[in-house]
Image (cartoon, rainbow over all chains, first blue to last red; front, side, top):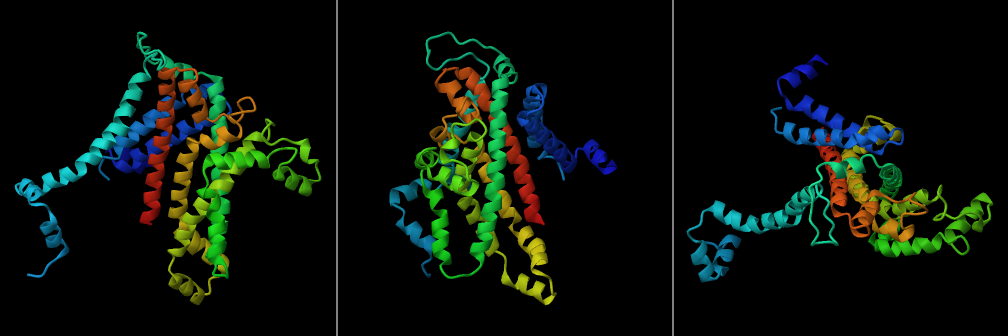
Length: 62
Length: 315
């Protein structure tokens, strides 16, 4: 866990990609879940942030 | 000096063309070859995407070209993301996506595993199994519409034979509970062969000596299946899931032909709803925002999926 946070602090690709992946996954789940409308409302912004983050951080150093 | 394919190609170049490219660097020649493709890519993919993003912030209507176009900011996005009907369409799409991929992978892999065993008539069975995939979705839609007919449809009679129910007592396409499953069945019937072919390619790429080594180590068939077959077919399976996932997310023709999105809007997938907004209600700006939401979702999913695929391949 501390490796993950130190990777985030040192702008390393692995942990940042992991974070972006989690955001995209959560965003897609929020978009398609049948439980709460407010989750659906905020799904796009979560997916968008995750996707843009993924594109940017895939250029970080390993 | 012996003649090579390169010298033969060079001598076949017309003198006028040869004179023109003589002074060009390798990099310039490479750009000449790649240029048209990049131009097409920009014209067909990138420009429409940027244009759609631009339209998504306006109230543009494609059937009223002369009307003043106003910038509405994020209002289109706000309306889509607070619309409970679109939320239901998203859920219908999720149901369709999840179950079609689940059944296609399960049945496709099983069929590939069986076909991979050498037996008489193996090639004939492969050809028969892949036939549905070669049909047009419009033909498949119409064909299954007849099969699902409560009075004369073969499907209802087969279900009646096994369950003892009256064939006309249920309607696959007209029932709110059954219609979502009816489109899942048809898509699975049509596209399982595609998944099967990809799995078959994966299974045939596993060298026999790995199984022979496992036999020498006295590994059981079950152990071989879980430690050799599954890990080595996994990248192929993931590729199949990626292809089918993206394709089914934008599924349109088959479902329109079968149910037209009904009954009510139980099978109205996002692509059908998007088409209605864009070309029936002519709310182009609103539909552009809708398309961008779907695009970002598919793009995000495809990105993480490609990353996962690369990781599996590296192993």
